[in-house]
Image (cartoon, rainbow, N blue to C red; front, side):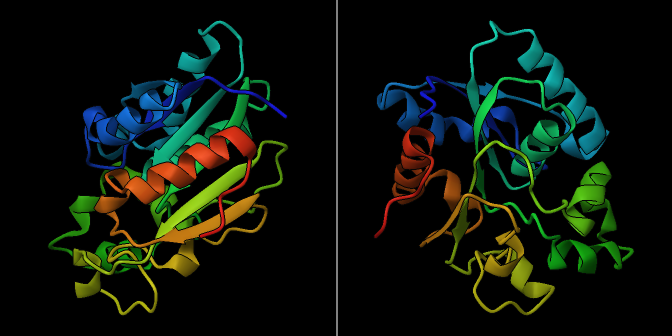
Length: 208
C-alpha cells in the first residue's frame, strides 16, 4: 500500500487558494503535510492550470504525493495525472467535481448575461473528462445537500445544489461516496474531511 504524507489541495474555479484552508487544517491535524496550490482557473483556463501544476509537482523531491481538488480543482488534478503519468502522484481525491460535465455550466453557457461566470474554465466544466483508466486510485466525495444557485438554472435530483451526484460518477473511479454537504460546504464538512483522510490512507472510503 502506498503511504503518502504530502498533499496538495486545489480550489475551485473562482475561489482563491486559501479557500481550501479548512480541509487543509483537518489533514494537517491528522499528520499530513497539506499545502495549498493556487491557479487562475477562470482567467487562464484548465490548460494553463494543468501545466502549472505539473511543473510544481515536477520541481518537488520526487516522493509520491496526493492531490485533493474541489470542483474544477479535482478535474485539473485528474487531467494532470492523465497527461503527465510520469509524475509521482499516489492518489487523487475529488470533492464535488462534475467529472461527467456540468448541467449547470451548460445552462449558464447558453445565457448571454451570465456566461462570463464560467471564464476560461468552461472547456472542462461543459464536457467533463474521459473515463479514468490510469493506475492512480481516484476517489470522489459528492455532496447531497441541495443548497446552491445551481438549482435556479436546472432541475437536479440528488445534488449539492450545484453539481448533481450523477455528474460525479465517472467510470474508472476507485471509490465514490456521498456526504450531507452543499457544493461549497464540502470544503468545510467534517464528514468530507474524514472520508478524504480514509482515502488518502487506505485508497477507500469508510462505510457510514
